[in-house]
Image (cartoon, rainbow, N blue to C red):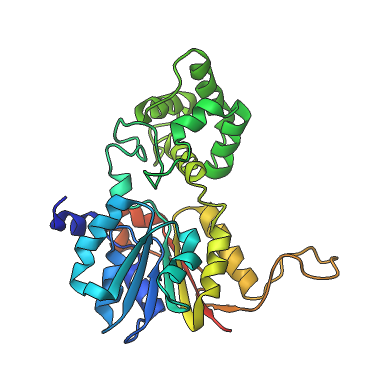
Length: 317
């Protein structure tokens, strides 16, 4: 893929707000825990002399494109093929103990979403894969739909997609499986959901959007690793270090919000418990009382920014 395409594919969401909160200074070290195509990383590296970036991504194709984009920064950029949940191991491998800032943009990258072969979008008829790490041995979306019970499929679609008609969709999926024609492609799943849901013409999103979101989250275990990642990230920050997280749906945002609240000292335990058992401790100061969202100009230029929410904190000790 030519270099110029890598630069055109990715429009970093909430870029100005991210830079303001991270506030890069000369010689500081940052982790871009979801490197993608390197849009945020490029801006951080360009903003201050001698600033360094440790990039993490589980998609090798994205890594290769990011390398092209960031090669002008030479030794100031280093990238690791890994999941953001492995941030502590990555820094050990990089021989770095503490960093000045961490960024995590949790959205599906443009490269993945716009791929006609990866199965993230129903805009293309492709194998129903959805693994962010294409080299992973984890079961893909088609595999889940072929092996899970109707109850489990409905639970995933309801909990991760917040789809109220999850039982009806799950029943259709299992009926198709029992007939000897399991759902294998994005087109098959999208058409099945559309027939099951039958939403009106005035609905703003495609009927299959929530189901696709739910399956992607389940395949990649996205929510289960999020709190641990934030806690590990805060642990490897220097005193005064900044942590910025951008989410794209309510379930992610809720986990980020509550984890940061616990780390700022807010206890979520029932009031009658004699002592805190939820893990609350005052380690950070929350910098965003409410999540920062994209303005009208950005959402007009980049529709994917509509659902973005940014939260940030400052390491205290």
